[in-house]
Every structure is written in C-alpha cells, then in structure tokens.
Amino acid sequence: MSKIVVKITGALVPEYQSEQAAGCDLHACIAEDMVINPQEYCTVPTGIRVEIPEGYEAQVRPRSGLASAHGIGILNAPGTIDADYRGEIKVILFNFGKTPFRIRSKDRIAQLVFSKVEHASFEIVADLEQTGRQEGGFGHTGRQ
Image 1 (cartoon, rainbow, N blue to C red):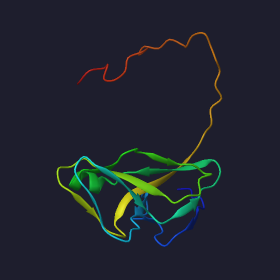
Image 2: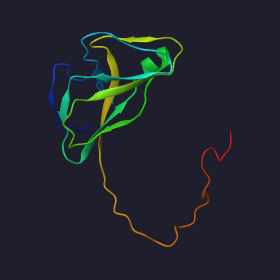
Image 3: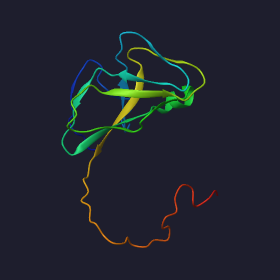
C-alpha cells in the first residue's frame, strides 16, 4: 500500500482503524452536543485543516456503522476536498432514520479516503462510438 504525506492542523487527527482500512475516521469537534432530527441535516465541524499533495483529493464518506445502526449518512456523499482547499473540514450529516441522533465531541462521524486525480481534456466530435448498451441507464438491464 502506498502512502502520501498530508499536512494537518487541529487536535483530532484522523485515524485508520485497521492496517488495511481505506478510510481514516473524522471526529466531531464541537463545544456542545448536536442533535439531528429525522429527515434533517446539519454541518458538523471536525476542527482540522489539511494540505493535500497536488494531484490528489480527499473524499468524505459515510461510516457504515452509523448508517446501519442509526440511518445517518452524508448529504453530499462523497464530498470532495480539493488539494488547494485550506479551510476547516466539515461534514454534512443527514438523518435518514426515524429518531433524533445525538452527536458528541470526538464522535467518529465520517471517513476520509485519499485518491489520485486525473484531469481530462475534452475532444468535441460529431458522434460517439456505438456500444451494445447505447443510451440504456437507470435500471435498463432489469432485475435478475
């Protein structure tokens, strides 16, 4: 597994929970508990800022445990943090569940995954190459 160096400021440094984990956990950094009511969202500060190497991005993704146990997800999942962003990382949590959800300081609220970025150059053409699928989308293959 390759590693990159990400510079960070803040007290709650993200942690990988296992040797092969793809994502490191982001923690809530809040002065008072927050409550997300069902079908509502809130923006949760993490208290950290990062300097991601050029050519990489960070993706903010939901934690499966929060999703399965409480119906908590991320409204704009995955959220993208560009290499030139220097502001505080904040997570937009959404309560898809049926009961209010309480967030406490230092709770693990999301995970951060780093990925290489490729830029595309676009070539304008009159037509696109034909495929077997063509314009089929949104479940066009049916259920098995």
